[in-house]
Amino acid sequence: MRREQSSLRTPSLSLGRFKPLFKVMKKFYITTPIYYVNDRVHIGHSYTTVAADVLARYHRLKGKRTFFLVGTDEHGEKIEKVARNLGETPKQLCDKNSLFFKKAWQSLNISYDSFLRTTEKNHIKAVQKVLDVLYRKKFIYKGVYKGLYCLGCEQYKTKSDLVRGRCPQHQTKPKMMREESYLFRLSKFKDILENKIKNEEFKIRPKERKNEVLGFLKNGLQDISISREKVKWGIPLPFDKKMTCYVWLDAFLNYLTGLGWKGDPKKIPDFWPPDLQLMSKDIIRVHATIWPALLLALDIPLPRQLFVHGYFTVEGQKMSKSLMNVIFPEEMIKKFGVDSTRYLLLSTCPFGKDGDVSWQKFEGKYNSDLAKGLGNLVARVITLVKNSKFQIPNPRQITNPKLQAEINKTWEDYQKALDEFKLNEVLVSIWDLISFCDKYIEKERPWEEVKSAGWRKKEVIGNLLFALDNIAKLLQPFLPETSEKIFKQLKTRKSKPLFPRI
Ligand code: MSP
View 1 (spheres, rainbow, N blue to C red):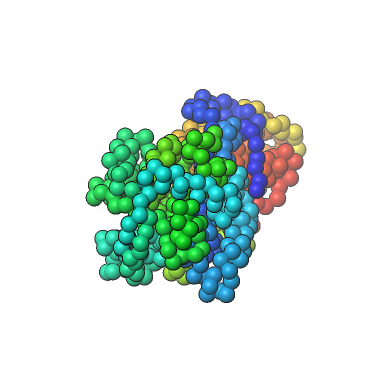
View 2: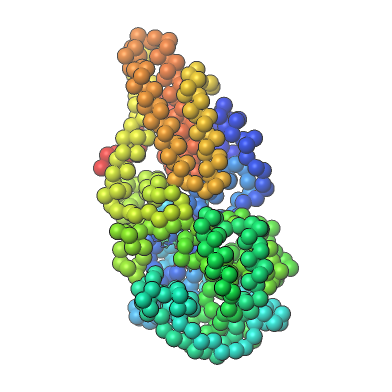
């Protein structure tokens, strides 16, 4: 776990203008889904986590008290089954695979504050306490539950969820389950949820996802089974120890226990509620129904906002282990490096839409945007400084109004786009600034007079250094190591290739 602290580097002209635009909030609490440990980390999981990392870093740099939670979802039938097939105990599988997730996040430079595992003692105790409270408050009752169950999703499905009788995510036929069960009174919360989503007290973005949820709610909500009789690998219900807790209920509570919560609804951690919860489309429905209903039943404030991004697809199919079309982050890191991988993931498509990925596309983008674009600009400017006979001081101001306007505009767009989680657009606008600088160099041709120490060329190089300093600042949350390297090159004036061509 790595963290950088405090405000965005040295104050600059542009930053001065950037600050007052910012809505002041004291804290920022951001979460990702906790991933199932039966899966190996692929770039779909990495996408959500890198995006969350960028936003966490951004808010930290702005001086907010920030908490960034990640973790692994370790109970349930699916994990029990995979462990059995591997000849391992579920615990062994969980220990091994949660470590893979931790390692992957380390190698992607993810600055999380806490990594929660649902098999931790504190979490288990808190879940049991919650179950007790809900049972006492009569939000949980005993009954019989019958329905089609998709193991891949660990969710009951209705007929309308299926395509030709199969789960569209996993391409498998769900099985009919009929169990004596404890049920949670989800149906009670339909109206209140509908209202809170409509009036944006509980915000869901992008808008089309909000509409999807409202459409789904219109048909009403059914009570859900929260117990499993046959699943051993789960948290025992405190009021009926033969049963274990439904994995989703257990998993949702991670967003509270990850802050050290012990399960008492009256003692809520001070980072609560989440300012932003990131996820993809596959799990928005449960996050927009079961999750807030649980909180309402416990009298705990709802998260402020859910943001739902799209899928990484391969030739149009969702990337997932079950479809065997995954790319692993370590392969990308090996080929492109850490920051390049972060860049390639986030620049694939607008955040909120699906994006088709392939090695070929990644390579093309690496060469054009990183090797040729950013890497080349930094190398050119630092070489100009190195080759010039005269001293070029660290610039405090800029003398070209057009370049200055471009830098200011980039900061303003940056702010707005980051507040709306348009991560891909932010990168596009930084890269617009990079190509503006390229054109500025071509127009001014500062190398021609470098040796004769012409004052104008000195000014041009000074302006470029100023622009590079800003580019490095803009890049901080996205490419933290590259940003440091650029600052270092600006200081030492020694050029070192940032992104060798592939
Ligand atoms: N364990 C549950 C979440 C519980 S949260 C209380 C779960 N786990 S999961 O391992 O299946 O992760 C799903 C999430 O992984 C998605 O919502 C998304 O964040 C990420 N992604 C997995 N595959 C992805 C793509 N192909 N594309 C984009 N994101 C992907 O559901």
